[in-house]
Length: 197
Image (tube, rainbow, N blue to C red; front, top):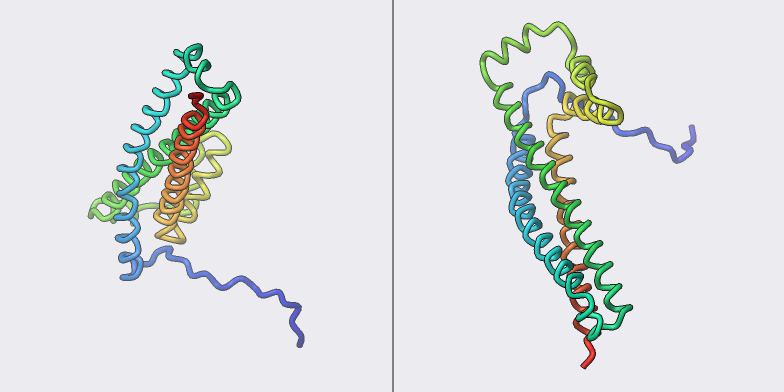
């Protein structure tokens, strides 16, 4: 037989109903300790957003005086850069808050699942875990309901799905924070380099 160059996706094993492996515990430990840096980054972002907003407020409140020493085009460019910087910082902070709250929820759920009473609760359940996740998602409005259901179903088949998602969000948080800082520096440089002597 000949091949058309199309390969079938690799067979994925499901974690459903299985105990955590040593490799999964190791990965989870590494990823969760890495995620702890997100809280410090979020706090840092709070301060940089505040500082950037204060600079914008200062420039705008003294616009007449500032416009005498900085060209109008540079002033406009600086304010636009500061504004976009603040937006990137706000998105970074929001993602950081989502990661921190999500991680707290996952830790709390894992604590419940490890207890003896929860083992009995799971033994008494009459529906499949995927069906349970579908029912958990019902009160959420679309598209959140679809996201919650899909996230829950992934968590049933891949015990590390939540940790992987949080690590990806942490990466996005880091990138947004970098954009936030670079834009703020670019705005300051734009204003500083256009000062008329």
